[in-house]
Length: 258
Image (cartoon, rainbow, N blue to C red; front, side, top):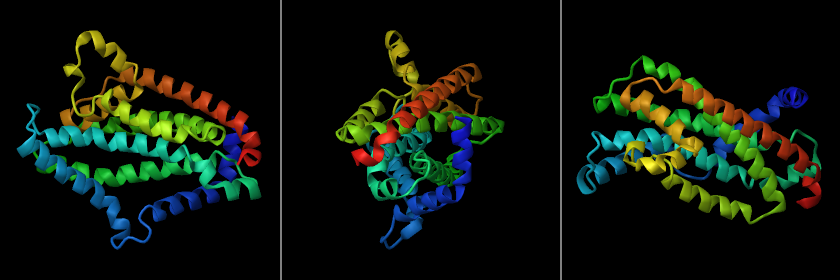
């Protein structure tokens, strides 16, 4: 793996180019262009505020912010995995014609996803302050939480991007699985609302702890449970190692399969 990481570093200019291409093509041809990076989360927040403040009122104080703190990392998670599931096939010309570390393709999507998440924070943090939620020292835990999530997303993305080359229906199955996963992750509700006998099953979902950690530092203003977070860091590293091993095994025949 060390050798592969060194090789990836030597192709850093290609990685940078792919990331920039991903960011540019998201809104290519639209009138607003790159401004949609900020407008999308802003409009989403406006919709949540109207719907959950006037139509579907919740007992949770400042519910739009409660929801928005979780929606942003979930969007990063789901959009990256969905996009990576077809990334090899979408770049079949590159894969067949030139040599480069194939891991660059899913990695470029993840990095672009992280950048988009940061753009979402440009909307989230001022919105929290405007609604009376104060940002405090707990925000120092943000890099660790993001690191844990990014490792997890990369590991899963390596698996699905490689397997989809051989099993093309996987891309469509992933979309359905992600829709189902949304409802078994405490995004629209706190984990405390889940009956105690079922909470164990929710905690098997790694995104449960990650979403709760984000919500703790942004919404509640408290430090996350570091013992749980470090446990999920280990879990994410295991997923990454397995994902990398599967990807390296399957990538040998990418050109023939495509």
